[in-house]
Image 1 (tube, each protein chain N blue to C red):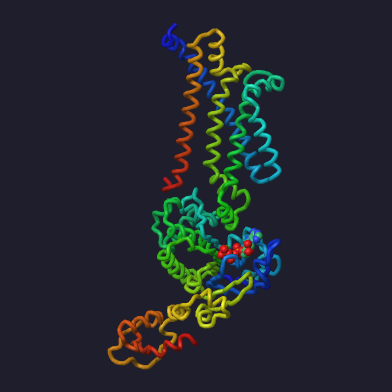
Image 2 (image 1 turned 90 degrees about the vertical axis):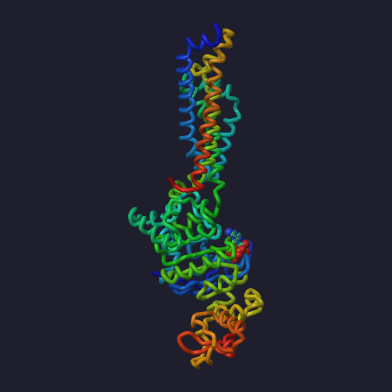
Length: 213
Length: 309
Ligand SMILES: Nc1ncnc2c1ncn2[C@@H]1O[C@H](COP(=O)(O)OP(=O)(O)OP(=O)(O)O)[C@@H](O)[C@H]1O
Ligand SMILES: [Mg+2]
């Protein structure tokens, strides 16, 4: 069957699988953001927490992704949940690290002005420090999303679905149509996410250059 | 409203160095401007930051009005004290209006009151109302510093602290904004502490000038007195070789003029003009006497009295 005929008959399937793939990735990054952002803030506020958290997430990050999925099987079995957990763990590093770095690199003069004006610890965090760190946090988020879209491809190995299903089946039955139908959407989604998030990042910094809408 | 600020025997020691501030006793009268001046590292910033307790004294006490500040709730104290720093310190992620609104919001003012206050302050510091929505990065250095002053005045604090506020500005903008600050002060009458290492700025702005050296208060007097009688060679050197010219440019004609009538056709000079202006007019016209507007005269002999006082 030609690639064209293949796509013409199967496009609905491919689209559905891609959509599932994207959902898995975004769910995992969403969770990583929910967990990683507070961890980054905590690390910023407490030295001990910083040592503990930053080292742990770096160690997790050094585990090869395939091995991380493998490790999930004895712990959580197979399926969607262990797959998401693996991607969340892997996405923690860029989120936590960038939150921490973003907060640590705030101009100390600005922090002091905030204190000097009588802001409390939390007001300062939410009104000054996090907004100032936002561009750096956002850059970490972008890395996490792009990583996750690639990594979810392997989720197929523990029966969580996604475009990996098409790619691995294609390899095993030597159907290049299937391999292409699986990998091109991964690539497009990864590049697309990267592009869109970069654009958002730029708009975010530019909005601070001129005037409020 | 303004409050007196008083240092009573205040010392600040950082570990391993001589005291940054050494047994400082100093009263800053309510509604006056104190210029703290001295070379780098003499303790100006440390002195100032002890007032809003960004730095706690090692010993001694500071009073705001009658109240010892070490007993006041920290946030409450800081919200009563406007704070302006050299590198502007505006928050880049907030618009001009949001920057100005910070302390009023912390104090729980309602939106209408905050909005009205922002308009009032922008007018006070000479910025057009359209600048409300601008972000700090889109403003010039001088405009940013005006916003900094507006922000510090937002909640009408009795005390204003300014740490080298105009240090980053070019000389022309600097003098203009100094004049603006004096004009603002004549309306708001705050107790202002302004740190500078520029003696000219201290003389222009201060009702009194406090000269610090290695944490010690060397001299604390009105600018004219410091110019007339520098306490020692250190103060004289800070002032510079043109001490008497500075004195002439500080004193008004009214301070040494006589009531005698001026000779006919003498060139005129205003009572509030500086003696420097008057002297230049004499050199310019080749006359040794000027007619003072509103009666009286200024003779070149009168200028000799200026340095004695
Ligand atoms: N946090 C600190 N820890 C240790 N030493 C300090 C600290 N802050 C200031 N000092 C020391 O205290 C002394 C006075 O410093 P301060 O910042 O008050 O000087 P300054 O007069 O404001 O100088 P400049 O004109 O350079 O701003 C200096 O010797 C400085 O090194
Ligand atoms: Mg200083």
